[in-house]
Image (cartoon, rainbow, N blue to C red):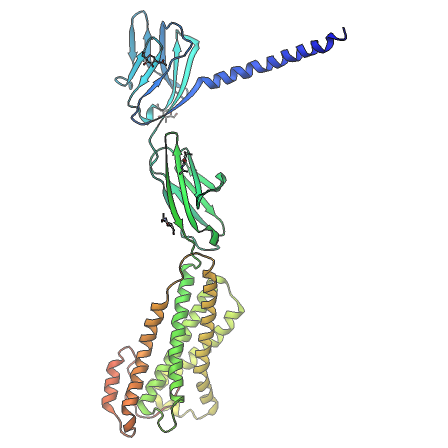
Amino acid sequence: MQLHRPIELLGTSWMLLAGLLVPLQQAAEAEGALQRRVVVVGSSVLLAGPADAVHIHSARWEYLNGSVSRAVVQYDEGSHYVAIHPPYVGRALFHPPNGSLLLEDLQESDSGIYKVTINLAERESLKVLLDVLKPVSRPQLWSSGLVAKATGEVLCEVVEGRVDTITWKKDGQALPRGRGFHVSGSLSILHLRAVKKSDCGSYSCNASNGISWQETSLNVTVAGLSPPLKDVLRIAVVAVVFAAVSGWGLVFPVCQSEKLRIRGELWRWLSAYTCGLVCVSSILAGTAGLLWMREEGPSIAVILPEIVLVYVIVVTFLVATNVTFQPTKLIQLKSTTAQRTMGYTAPGGVLLVVLTSSFHIKNIHHRHEDGCTAFVDVTALAVSTAAVSALPLLAIFLCYHTTQGWQNERDSSCAEKERSSRSFEMSLPNIKDPVPTC
Ligand SMILES: *[C@@H]1O[C@H](CO)[C@@H](O)[C@H](O)[C@H]1NC(C)=O
Ligand SMILES: *[C@@H]1O[C@H](CO)[C@@H](O)[C@H](O)[C@H]1NC(C)=O
Ligand SMILES: *[C@@H]1O[C@H](CO)[C@@H](O)[C@H](O)[C@H]1NC(C)=O
Ligand SMILES: *[C@@H]1O[C@H](CO)[C@@H](O)[C@H](O)[C@H]1NC(C)=O
């Protein structure tokens, strides 16, 4: 008795197990009954009847879509009649011996479940899920303008063909499936948070369905600089060039001997032009600072120079306009403080513009390193600005050198030449009094 117990127990547990397994097996069979066939538009497919059908007296193929069913083919052995229903007329061929159905010239709308019932017995039925697909078209791949530290996206869209999966690769390495976010079947978006230099590279997008796949690649670059920062860079470069040219205009008279020093009308023009240039370069440097702060937030390292720049702008503007239009007024400014103020403002302004602009250019260059695009080419801008701004100075110096021998004479012919060569400079009234430099 005691020996039999374990065997009995084993027997019952086996039966229990078998009882559990049978429904599972049935479920698996039911799953297996729904085969899936994937075909391309325009092709044909042979849907086989149930393999275990011995003799077919009658058969019915129907198309199921949701709860709706519609007949495709009806066959009755007694009448030898095969009825083919629209829209399959001319496209369907039924084989009575084995119950298989050949469908030709398939369209996307033919996709669905096809069910065959043999001899009206539900038990002898079979379902086939038919997917008629168009081949996927080549995906279109593009990126939103990626700027370092901002958020960005790389998008992949397939215009034609139902897409089952879209997979992403970067530099040949598969990206985790979770990275691509499917908005709809045919659009996948790769979100990049806080874009980095390491996000640069070749991205490819592989769109596939049961019958085809297509892949497209795109070289994605990350810009280190946003468009406003590029503007700041350009403005700062122009400011530095203007400051350098006006510095040249300031240094030139100092380097001359007292006897040969530039005087008279030429001196006045030199002063007015140099002062005006310092004023303009200060305005540009100030603008660059403001734009920088708008992008990067206020900082004391930018605000303090801005305040001084405003002072330089006001003083140089007043001097330049007075030298140009009211030279007599300036001569009356005898106070040494006023003279000193004017004498130091322009060189100080030049220095400040060079310093602040260099600071911006250095910061912008640093910021540019966060991306992988080429640095903004400012050579042409710098050279052309330098050429244009130095031209009036060159004309003044040329005039000075040709008239050096005749210091005492008023050289009106030279002044005429001067005027014509400096079309972009403000016109000057003919005032003969000598004035102090800026
Ligand atoms: C059924 O019969 C047709 C015609 O004889 C044949 O072409 C087809 O391959 C058969 N189907 C299967 C599943 O054997
Ligand atoms: C199948 O059903 C869907 C929605 O239920 C419908 O949009 C589609 O047109 C139907 N297809 C056919 C071939 O009837
Ligand atoms: C694209 O995806 C399909 C389906 O997943 C795959 O068969 C194919 O090899 C992939 N192509 C490339 C170039 O990886
Ligand atoms: C991407 O860049 C690499 C190397 O710079 C080049 O060989 C390739 O052709 C580029 N691909 C595309 C799609 O532009």
